[in-house]
Length: 329
Image (cartoon, rainbow, N blue to C red; front, top):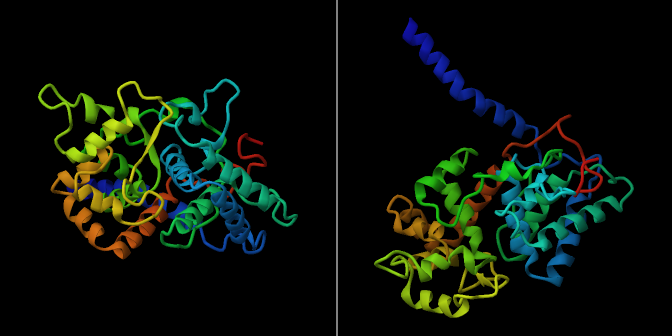
């Protein structure tokens, strides 16, 4: 009887967080603004398309912004908040490299939504970011998907809350899996979301150790394709300008496709945390599958980013709908 009670207790303690997260995400729904702002999707899409036509950076910048927002305090647009004394999430070293075009995309989309009297101050910045993320994926040639809506904006954004919450370029598979599983994301979800590195760029400092000082025996990381490593050395000389950025995908950097996985097969993953997906035998079959099947990668990405969009969301009367995405009401 004691054992039975204990197992029941254990089961309920395991199920409770799952039930809580599913009730919160059950409050998200694609038609959330049907009566308050029925045109929200087309308003956001049109603003995002204009921005994308001005600069391609809009796509990777918005996608990365969404990921960084959701992994810290949940998808509540807290990453957009500014602090007068530089103590907000966006001021953390892990967020300082977030490109301004991502923030600008959300601000422009919010202005477009609020320019319609019926919609003014009805749509959260968190939902606008989620919609804009889907739109940039589509504009870059990736899959379209239905975005669940109904998130509210968080009121707290601190530099401290970012600490140890975001995956690092040096992570191995166990570190990646444990960080993603904290948010209910599986290894397959993690690999699919890593595929977003098919767009975007990185500063040389984030991977210089792999090409200059890997270990006493190897100056170049042996898991890195040698030709690619020498190419990276040319683009990233030792005293490189810290503003120089390198494409994450050396083959089709402006197309959302499965080239990222084919690059991994050839030793052309820019970060250790990219290449490990192929070098570790536990994740390699998924990389090979996505490399050979763009449609399967697209489906897995849609599933993963939908799950990501449910992480730690505020709904109902939690949080607020910010009038200005960069500050609390």
